[in-house]
Image (cartoon, rainbow, N blue to C red; front, top):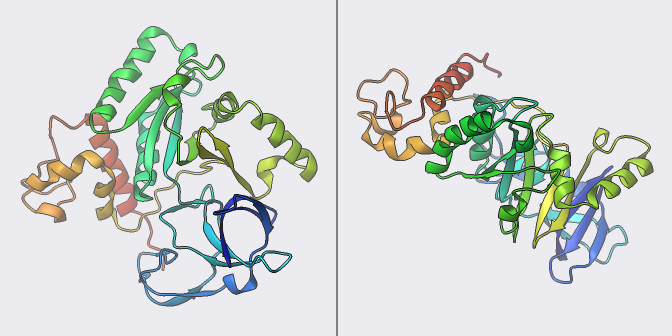
Length: 315
């Protein structure tokens, strides 16, 4: 058995890069992967409803781009025999072992949304992945509009998030991005119209040509089929994927939401009820009405909390 990392998935066929030799291998998933017995500590074991317990069970596990796998080099099909435990994974797009997600937000067309940004941050924090905030289309907004966005994002920088401003068409602001990709698997996220394709093609001008070739070969749009690929860039890899197609806070317990607002963590040590405080109605809460927390962030937190709490339970 040899180890490889999946760098491409298209139509059920996998492309691996061998961990040691760096050779590119075409592979298929072994039938034995379809159903695996997982114990409760397995990284593949997920709760699917509020009442689901993490327990030993038989589930279907499919390899994802980014997975480290073992494959049989003696078989012409190089069948994948085993998937190594994942550090994390995303479902839309299907990528595993991601180091960072670049959240692309348009300054205008569509208008910048702190509400949408906070939703992305929650999903990425929940997956235990580092988020990086990128504001695109800065050439299309006036000075006052840009300053308003910068003023709001200064809070996000204060609590620990990296923020970058770019003009993809003229490659302005890209010099500050050069070092962030080294030894990292990066995924791009952002609402429709945020300029993800323009941003990717500014980073990798040949990417547009490659994706057109894939579309022609398939006889359809690249993202209408199951296609995800990691491209080598600046010493790391960037996932060219359909991206986050739908934002949904797929949580069953509203009480866990507070864990994904990073500025709450240190402040909540001063709450009367400690870790049990959900920062909504409790007396002696150090988070609620705290002047050091951005008002819109706390308002979004309350809004999301109520949404999750009022979801109809699935059994």
